[in-house]
Length: 420
Ligand code: GLU
Image 1 (cartoon, rainbow, N blue to C red):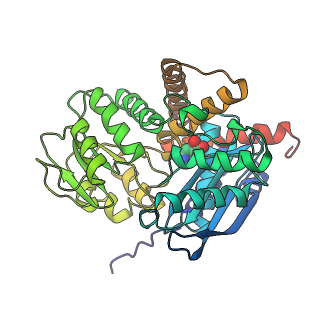
Image 2: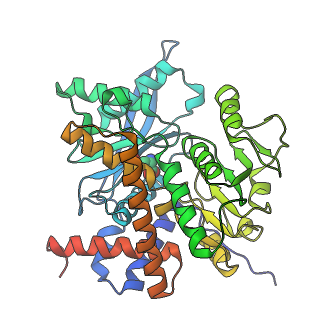
């Protein structure tokens, strides 16, 4: 009889499982899991927006704050039709572990609004952004919870949110939100930060695995703010980007895609589809390509057990949050495919968000080279903290990354007297 694999497609169940297993692997007190298994606060709101045709339409919004044991909570806000409360809760847990692994003085948070951003005009998006921050204004702030961009949100929308908050409070509060426009106190290097952090840890992993990036081939799922910068930087490091797939289509050329030309194409066409000199490609086909490195830079639960069985790459760097299901992870592990987990490979963004917040609190702004150097150092140090933990305990990078987080979170819990 064929065995039936049940796939864990609920990211919240996945996140809770990852935390529980890391607590067990370290032999940390059960209380640590009790503190971390749920976000400490969740806000659900309805955001009425007057649409361009004069009608009022209400959108559902969420903000989940996971734990403030290490510092204020931090995390992005996504605009997407499939946002759910459970997804936002899972993403807030992952933000806690990203921050803990990178040594940032934050806990995790995440927000989301259920909407179809492509169907909204810029004016409607502005009203939605303003309405969202008004709805959560009583629980955010530079010392409480600091939002940022995520899927389908960007610096422009962060600018509107900051303005709305400043008007409400009657003061300027640049440290409220990160990923803002430069002129409002944004940081140099923030836009490319997640992509840069991902490229840096790929370089470190390749070194540990004993292969050079020069001539290595890369396929990316997603070519938004994360995927496009990761592709550019990996190409600069000597990789050949042969395939990219986004929500509307794909582009494949086994001899390599010109990343700069592809970026210009996407700027005009809003998709990689039909890029001159490429053939079409689906996500399913992308994951099965004969490439060295795959970078999932889109949404959750893409690499299921079924997909994982088709992977030929030797390294996967999770630039998205939660792109691999637990069953997918097991298959990749059994097949000897190395995975740099999301909580490290996607941590460059929040790391530069931290630099942005520090600059806002000091009112003193750094040159881009300084941001890049500091990001590079923190990504490299965190990669090695994870790799050392993996070697010491004989576990995967993913388990080890969560274990480093649990160590730091338990230390903070003990220092606050929450656990013995
Ligand atoms: N949304 C990004 C993430 O998932 C960045 C969060 C932030 O900068 O606070 O890591």
